[in-house]
Structure formats: structure tokens, C-alpha cells
Amino acid sequence: MRHLSDRELWDLAGRGDESAFGELFGRHARAVYNFCFRRTADWAAAEDLVSVVFLQAWRVRGIPLERDSALPWLLGVAMNVLRDHHRSLRRFRHALERMPPPLDAPDIADDVAGRIDDERAMRRLLGIVTLLDQRDQDVLLCSWSGLSYEEAAVVLDVPVGTVRSRLSRAKARLRELASTNGHSLGEAPALSGAIVEPVQEVDGT
Amino acid sequence: MKRDLRPPADRDLPPGRLSQRREHLVDELLTMGRETVGGASRRRPGRRWVALVLAPAAALALAAGAYAIITPPAEDVVNGIGCYAEGRTDSDGAFVGADGRDPVEVCAEIWEDGAMVQGVRQAPPLVACVAPEGDGVSVFPGDPGICQRLGMSPLPQGYRHAAARFAAMREELVRRTHLDAPQNCMGVDDARAITREVLDAHGLTAWSIEVGPAPEGEGRECVSLAFDPRARTVTLLRAVEY
Image 1 (tube, chains in turn brown, green):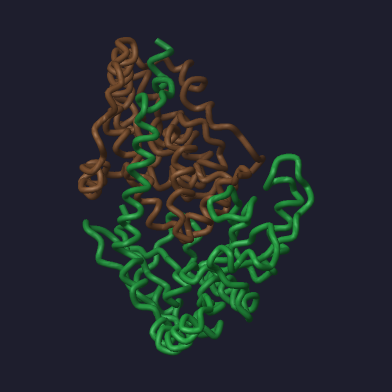
Image 2 (cartoon, chains in turn blue, yellow):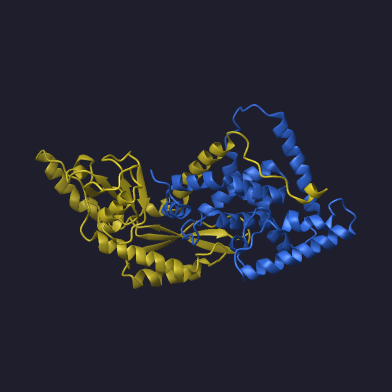
């Protein structure tokens, strides 16, 4: 069978093809998983939220996809789900309860330890980031996912120019926080390279 | 210290969980489909008429030792086109939306793109068939007798007109409701009014509008659209905006 684009799969899903939607899940679950982790600092919750995001996206499957990639759109759904992820998890709790238990795969000690370290590091980072305005946090979340300005604009449902200005503001505010709170995160020179720059400029507006 | 300013590197889902979650998702979608659109599907305008009129004819044909296949109305099968690589329904295939063009032409283009069978860029003779309970068109390589051998019937008369009309209606409805952006929101009343207007404008006056069950949770309620040509129904699916 030929390789179908996201748009074709989305169209099929819009007509009720569950397996086409499953294929989209296979393509984008990892990106959504990491996106959710960066807001929750909890890998287990992020895994459940991946399911929630796709269950929620299925409900609006009749809407045509305007871009070739479904990812920005899915991350837009994720952004809404993450506004109150506890409530999102409660809302789909019955579906999540039907999730079979994990396979009997052997734990890899390094992986387990690495995930615990990740969660600790992410909590520290969120401790600073959550001091920002919510909209600035959102744009930062997009930048961490390596989205272009254009893609971030789709996720946030705002014009590209707004993404630029919010990112600029987030960058300035982070510098300010880093320099005043005495936190170990406060190395201003690293901010532009580590947090802000992953958003790639795609046009000249 | 610099590493602290970066979120941790991306990770895969734990081993086996991606496929497990994917299977779980598809299972859940099947359940959701029955809960939301399934209710509307049970009410099928025209189904009763077909059963009453065709049943005696089918009985007569069977009595005579013949084999009768019920051809669905053209309006039932506008929900896409399946292009199959071989003359059987479990072969590989490509599935595309219907827009009113001849399904054989649509599938021939896919063959000529080399997308159906590796190394093959010429379409074989193709035949369009419809299954009695299907909602789309299936196109197989083969001779004209293939539809009957697969328990299907040839493309019903008026298919292209019906498919073009459905596609135009759907396109206009999505455009008018502005639901083509992920965070646009329209309530049930507005969506219902626009849907009725668009359906009527496209001559689909027999179509009905169903409203899905009330969502759980608090917040602004937004609808999305689900189309069921067999049931002649547009369902307004309700969800709470976060």
C-alpha cells in the first residue's frame, strides 16, 4: 500500500476510519508524549495524556487538515488538554481504565533512573517557567518542541507575529528571573541558545 | 549549569507501550463511534423502503434459482473510494475521498503514479463496484464480472452527481462553520442553523441533523461535524472546550 500523507490519513479518519487514525497515532505519539511531559514533568501522566489527546482529536476529526503535517494541529489539541491536565485525565478516566497493563518487559535500570532524573530536572525548570505569563509559557513549550514560528502559530492559534513578540517577551522575562532569583538556572547567556532558539524562523514577517 | 536550562531530551514511550496504546486507542474509537454516530446510523431514511420493495423481487429471484444482489442507492456510497491492488477485498489498497469524478479514473491515476504496485505504472482494466451495505466505492483490477463474484454490484446510476453534491455540501459546511481551525468554537444552535441551510442549498432536504450526547465537564461547549451519507445525517458532536 502506498504511503499516505497525514492529510490523507486525516481525511480517512474524518470518514470514520479508525485504523487511519491509528496510523497518525503511530507517527506522532512520541512528539505528543514529550510535549506533554514538558508541561507535567511526569512521564507516566504524559503517557496517559497522549491517549487523551488523540481521543479528544478524534472528536473533531470531521475538520479538514489545512497543513500537510497533522502534528501542529495535534499539539494544539494537546495544549488545550494540558490547560488542566488533571481534569482531562478525569474526563477520560473510563477509557484510560480500559488500557491494558504494561507488557512484561524487563526494566532497564538506566532507563528508569534516567526518567527519574528527567522528572527532577523538568520540575526544577518548570519552577522558573511557571513564573511567566501563561501565554509566554505556551510559546516556550512550542519552542522546546522545535516548532517553527509558523507551526507554533498553528498550535497557539495566533498570528505568526504574535508568536515572535511573545517569544521575545518570554526570553526577556526569563533573563530577568534568572538574574534576580539566585537560582542555579539563572545563567542568562545560556537562555537564548538553550530555550529560545529552537524555534526556527520561517518567514520574514 | 547550561543543561539545566534545557528540558530533558526526548524519549520514546516505554517498550511495547506505543503499539499497546495504539491498539487501545483504536478499540476506544470503535466504542466512541458506536456511542456517538452509531445512534444516528440506526435510523436510515430509505432503508425501510428498500427492504419493502426489494424483498419480493429477491424472493422471486431466489425461487427461480437466480442470485440477486441489492444495489444501494448512489447517495449511500459517496463516502470515499477504495482502490485495490488485486481483485479481492483483503488486498492492499489506497483510499481517497470522492469528489464526483469517475472512480475508475481516480484509481487509474494512482496506478499510473506507481503507487499501487511497485514497478507498475500502467493501470490494468479496472471495475468499480459497491457492496450492498457499503458506504463507498471499491475499484478492482479485473473483468466486468468481478463485482458479482465478490458479492457486489456495479456502480449505481447517478453516482457521480451524488458524490459531487455530497462533496460540495461538505466543503461548504466546513467553510461556513469555520471549524477548519483547531480552536474555533461554534455552539449547537448556530451549527444546526448553518447546517440546515447548507444541506437545503445543496438539495439535500431529506438529510437530518442529529445532536450528540451532552459532554461531561464544565466550560464552553463546541461542536464538530460527522457525516453519515447512508443515514443521510450530519451529527453535531458536542465537546467541552478546555
